[in-house]
Length: 288
Ligand code: NDP
Image (spheres, helix red, strand yellow):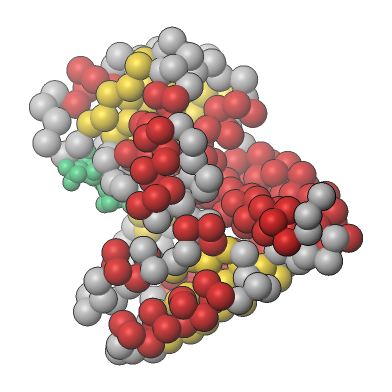
């Protein structure tokens, strides 16, 4: 029997509807949550991502602004912009659209975002807090995956979870979040020997490598929940995930599609973090 497709579009719509109510409450208190995006260069992919995020902000009632810089801008100008945004009371969340051009030190720029406006959850303080289980802003993609698991009532505690990919923005925080929910977690990388020996043990398999079709049906445990984070644009211009969708669907109990799985949830969780930041701001500004 074919596995159930996890509908990230519908789950993201539900998150946005919940957020709309919270935004209305905030507006009644005189606070409109504001998200600022910093966009350097003219990569069509980055422009598309920022456009999608701005559109999602409009839908939920968030103020959104984009600070654009040419690809050859110096790092100092971008850092100055971030400093101003850090001090701007209308802005509660700041995102730096990645990747930055090669002449940038990405971490210098990303770490310049104030911890309490770091709605991407990439600041070392927020990532470090994740280790301790007290995270203020968790990175959006793994947060979105956790929400998808919960929305589909997929048990986490006591399961074997395998995360393929160890990037700081997806794989590592993903593993920490699963661990915090009492899964037994393995992390696999490009150096892992016999990857299939790990993936076949997984009750929950999260794959974030950017290698289209890396995971095939024989690598998946029957009845597993399989989450495809990868998204790669093929030469034909379509989007491909890391998982052989058609093959794995016959074996997994749950499977996310690409597109329409994790991607929409990433944007929804960015909005959720921004609303959370604005709520914290409102609580601090108005003594109760
Ligand atoms: P990175 O390139 O930073 O990391 C990729 C990871 O995959 C690395 O840890 C790498 O291992 C591992 N890897 C590569 N090849 C293999 C292999 N053959 N076997 C096992 N592990 C492998 O990518 P990101 O984490 O930033 O993104 C991963 C994918 O997720 C990309 O397709 C990206 O576009 C997508 N993505 C999607 C999002 C969404 O919202 N849907 C959001 C963010 C990312 P090693 O460390 O050893 O090099």
